[in-house]
Length: 293
Image 1 (cartoon, helix red, strand yellow):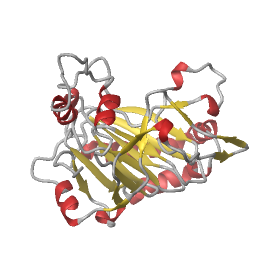
Image 2: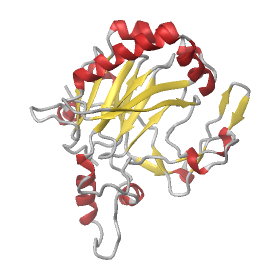
Image 3: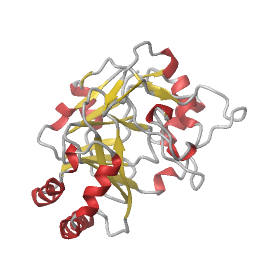
Image 4: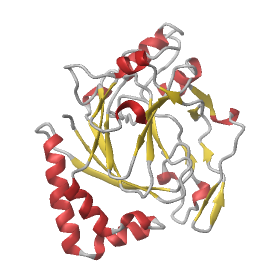
């Protein structure tokens, strides 16, 4: 399928659209023949997925001129129809580098480093708050989490709250392509809940993967394929239904170097993060808000 005009990319990175690649769609996780092994910090295992998960095809290529134009922003960019890309300021980079998070071997080590030197952490917090405030659109924002993932995971999102306290990484079942919608929202209100900013604090590049369709766009495409009255399509099950009926709708992949960030409406689009091919621990910091340029 051709890329439709939908969620746009507002790119402030010097690399421009060279960091964006596109594929020919998605595939049910059990239909993937290749097995990717995580080999890190004394652990070796093959990542497993939730029963109904869909993952991305690997035929990535550069964007065509037409596809670049389709993704280019217009004058109506906002917190639900645009992915923003950029670098954090140099003074903020220095604060993160002083904590040496990027050579950590575990989540516990990351958290220890964040709390080890109160003065450095306070300075970091002040500069980070100033940076976020500039893009907060005069609306409140909140800390969500420090994301820590193993290397060589194709799609990293998972729900560890369902696992016992002493779970092993091999016990995790990854979600696959998904939206972050909750019971607080519907397909028609997902665009009203703002977006998130995620800053790469790793020693390696990580990838943001997404489909440039809003939830309403995806729903309208499904209405042309199936009877809406006979099928209960909601914010929770729309990813699986969409990828079952549109496995050939292209997915986009954005490469983010250390200390680069994305801002994305993750309630309002199908997406995930990826550490495939990496060797070191993946670390990011995430805030929720209504961020935009």
